[in-house]
Image 1 (cartoon, rainbow, N blue to C red):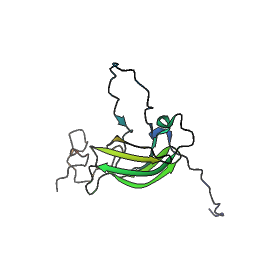
Image 2: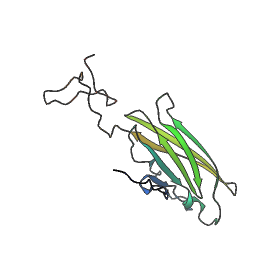
Image 3: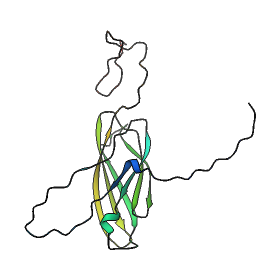
Image 4: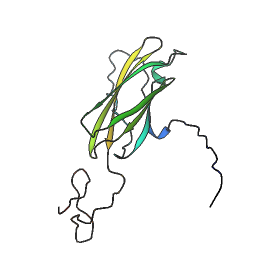
Length: 163
């Protein structure tokens, strides 16, 4: 088949599937016992995925029109070779956009995001991200299998081989 290549343009937009909003700051009457907030958690990812994850602080800036994120810091734990890594980050108004890649299957990571706003506010939140082997990798011919033919795997999801 022959033809001419046509340039393609893309309109990039953050995914709402991996968007977390900070809870707003609501005044609490004295003496009222509140339950602790639920931990923030992004949907699990596969070690082979490189995806955008978004943290929106707009609810914390309610009543402060025009305030936006001015700077951003990101820390990921654990931080060993082969662990989850920050591929890149960006600021989009009140949203911190992180491109996360890699990670060890079966590991729960904590991504701590610190932001400073244009008006001088600063806040930090930690968000959990579990890395799970979601893509099936064909087992090598030397893999040990069950009677049903399924490969035995290590806790990290890798096939166990007879080698």
